[in-house]
Amino acid sequence: MMKDNVVKQHIRYSWLIYALMAMLSVTFMSCMRGKPSEKPPIHLNPNMDDQARYDAMEASPFFADGREMRLPPEGTVARDDFHENDAFFYGKDDKGNFVKRIPVAVTEALMQRGQERYNIYCAPCHSRAGDGNGIVPKRGFLKPPSFHQQNIVDYPDGKIFDIISNGIRNMPAYRKQIFNVNDRWAIVAYVRALQRTQNAKLADIPADKVNQLK
Ligand code: HEC
Image (cartoon, rainbow, N blue to C red; front, side, top):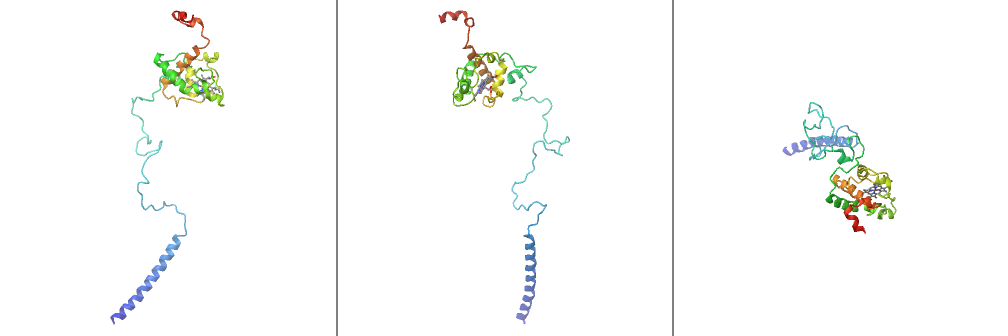
């Protein structure tokens, strides 16, 4: 008797199981038909893939003025990138004209530094003598003009500084390589010295040194 009951029950349940399997397979098949969905995909292990953060210039409801980037507190003074001295940083005066003279003290140390920097950064094209016959133009680059030609001798110091900083026509800018502003002025001082090595007049030589030439 007991056995009979068990078999009957088994038959009843097996019918249920077959029905369930049929339903499940229908569900799976419809899932696999790849319907496009507006919803984000299911992300089983989110780790820290999505985090709350702001991009630059984004709006934020958190602050009363609606901007996410905050302004520096009133009275803040910039310390490193404060380029207010136009003569020193740009070689220009208040009206935007090139300064005539180097705005730093021209010392022996500045000259030495200028010579060293010039020989590194300028001489490959302009040559150590400044005549434009450097090794780079010899290999095919455009030949630069000689620093000893009159129009360049007549340039204000600020213009030479500007040419080093921003380049001119075919000459690239060197402010990134010669990042130190003082170094650029040192080079200007040295270019001026180079120019004075040519076409010097006897009157340019201090009186007490003239004898040494004879
Ligand atoms: C890669 C080669 C190259 C290097 C390095 C270079 N120059 Fe020049 N420079 C040129 C060329 C080429 C010209 C001519 C540009 C033109 O007229 O198209 C020029 C022109 C000039 C002029 C004259 C601009 C004018 O108005 O005619 C000055 C001054 C000058 N360079 C200074 C410098 C100084 C100072 C350095 C070093 C910091 C330097 N250059 C480094 C290639 C170079």
